Figure 1 (cartoon, rainbow, N blue to C red):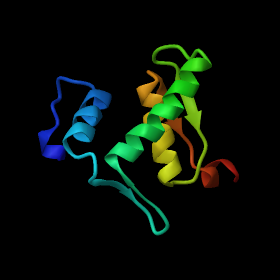
Figure 2: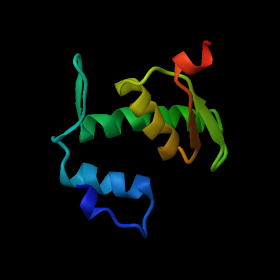
Figure 3: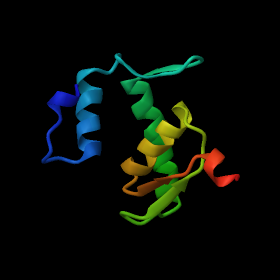
Figure 4: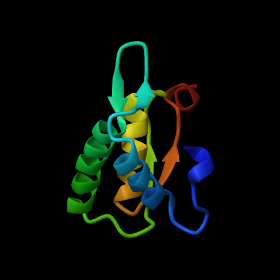
Length: 96
């Protein structure tokens, strides 16, 4: 799928295209959980809607402080879909 990406459109627009083309394909897999592209999109949309209700500004920097996980990826996509930029900081790096 990556070889189909178009450098002239945004990452979020490309993601929407992939969701439409492959809604039931696995997007994220961990030892305890698996999400399809459609499930990832729906959960990211929920995060995006919550952030927009908090009136984030377009291209606002938002920190994400989670261990690397499916939830972190959902959060990242939610931030991007809300129009924000994400600064990811693993907990292990901040706790020392």
